[in-house]
Image (cartoon, rainbow, N blue to C red):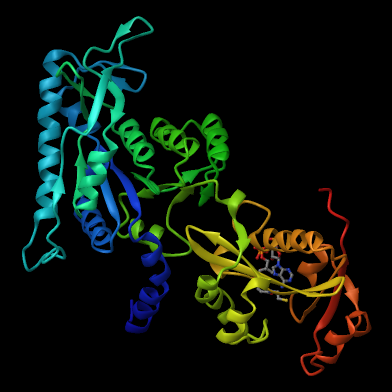
Length: 436
Ligand SMILES: CC(C)(COP(=O)(O)OP(=O)(O)OC[C@H]1O[C@@H](n2cnc3c(N)ncnc32)[C@H](O)[C@@H]1OP(=O)(O)O)[C@@H](O)C(=O)NCCC(=O)NCCS
């Protein structure tokens, strides 16, 4: 990347840096990721997140490593059956992987990106486990499941700026260690901590639909249907993410452990680089607040520069903020729309969506949602007619039910402000009264 590109990328990541600060992310590094040559880069990226103020809990898996150590181990479904002898081997493998991660985070060599980072990792008896028991007549022995997460102990460690490292082991009140499924553990920890994100890795880094297309956003309901239809190899991992999503986790992410930088791109760019699972579409639009002004400016500046929107300075935006609605994704303003009442009519203005969030896979588009939220606001205010002026977006507004009109159709005060040089097209839409 050249200097200009680098500076631009760094600047564009600013809203994400503030959005992620003090948020809790639970990250699952599965056994395949632990085996991969890109692991050191992923650890550096996690260290960067920690330095930027993200509260990190890192869970590791060990499936291929245990397969190698115990080649004749039995499974029931996706669960490994852990007998007394294999439990000690499993705990030995976990110990090695845990030590490897702790060593990575301790690297302070001058040649390492982690020099001066001074990251404390903490581990402990945070997980209470219970045996899975006998399922379909098969005794799972020392294979366990999470009974309770000591969320307060983990939070205390995070409050102390430590990075919490968890191996998939839990302890029963009788003092017995149990082998846990790492994906289930990660989901349980994310739910217990009321984490903001659960991040998982796989080789490909996107959830694909039945046509092989990468999906960038899915709601839990869409993921559920997709898993039934496609049954991917990592379905049990994605089912754990789905369970967390259904339980109230705001966002799940699947990213590639093979591609260097995929995690940072997913978290710090509008376009992302992976699949995000969230209910965000149902809570997308809301009235704008004063602190949204910077985000609105980010969205509209390129369109003002291209002449699509009339230029508004920051002061005016601040004064008129109550007229605005915004669309928010991941705590970031990605679109806006303004409504200016003129008696029984109102002007729709400044409809804009960040370029990276246009043409997204799920419909309706964010622009359509903003417009319908503005229409609802107008109806609630007893307004029966909407009008707007546009130079380049007539066809889109036609699709949204607006029709061509003339300057005479504008409310009298607005006619006086019409800019003939700009020669905008006038469009109107009659609103049906609200059902409620
Ligand atoms: C217009 C806008 C708000 C729509 O956002 P959106 O609802 O999220 O939808 P998309 O951008 O994904 O576009 C949806 C469809 O409308 C089409 N479309 C977008 N802008 C268009 C335009 N200016 N003229 C005609 N069609 C347009 C897209 O090609 C797309 O078509 P498809 O469904 O066949 O793929 C968004 O494209 C935008 O911000 N455009 C620039 C700003 C602008 O023109 N604002 C209006 C100022 S008056």
